[in-house]
Length: 270
Image (cartoon, rainbow, N blue to C red; front, side):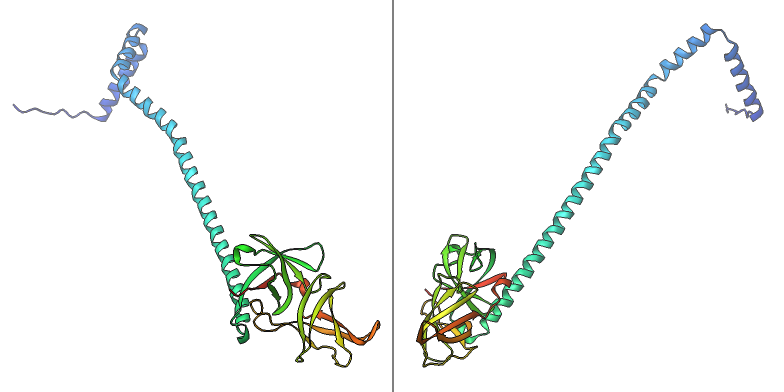
């Protein structure tokens, strides 16, 4: 037996739905209430499931936003830290290049090949302009009595040292005294610091002329200075007013010490 399908027109379907709606509208309240309860009972599970999904979606959506926001903040922080690290490395590279350039200039003097040099930065000037403090100390082999150079000339001697720093007494300090030689002559004397950013060389015979501009060298000192190194030049030379048999020699540094930011410590030979 074959089953036949009855085709219902759209107009007929509309009519039935309209009649059903009118019946529900004019039906007694007791009957419609029972229909509502039946509908609620039959479709309670799908309605509860939909409500739970809605609540869950509303609950976890902010958490997802917070997670995304946290990830973005972490990425931004890591990027900033990476940029700062690169900037620090670039600064260290520039500093290393500066040290290499300065050391290369020192090594260009063949007579200095046997000496060891240590680059040090000037931290703070002392209580007067005749003293400097540097950021290298005993940990780097710095010791009292070592010569210190600025602009390829002797500017002072280490007078005090700590593990991480040292004090440099300049050749112009009134308490300074270093052995020197005058020009190409065999005159060897002690040069003493004087007030006014100058130094004096006493006890030079008036019979030995010393022209203005004569170079003054720190004397060779085995273990401290392997060869003489320039320290100053004669600014003025005249007969000593107190003793006409000797000269009054005034020496000025050949380095603009006030403009220095770093110096070279000549390390003692072992």
